[in-house]
Image (cartoon, rainbow, N blue to C red; front, top):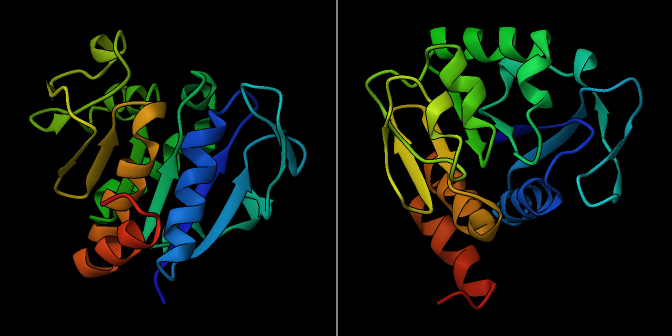
Length: 179
């Protein structure tokens, strides 16, 4: 079974995280939400508390097929454990997906150099060396980036198409009446 870890930190963008969890689960992906805080209860940027499935330290993120970092806050960029995991995944040629402000983490780690990417307007300056595209989602190798909250469904469907199949993503899209 395909697996995913979606990380959460206080201030995360709820629609980007939870829409991604929803879409991936509809597509048959075993998704674990992992808290990067001191508690399994993580509060999003719109004051919605979310109960994570586990603490990040207790999750085998390296074993997951994809690691997803939603946006909403720059706090992801301050979590050294997350950055260490992202670098390890890049070295192992494993999928990392980030949306909105979160591509700044990848940019700061040098993982976007020479790649196509997208992010929330104004965060392009943190995506060092990337060719920035104004599109909903971009796949370049094992890096998937998303534009922002309004494109959360497209971002999630793009991840699903990459880690499961294009047909599964189309089936989920049709089930959501997005055709």
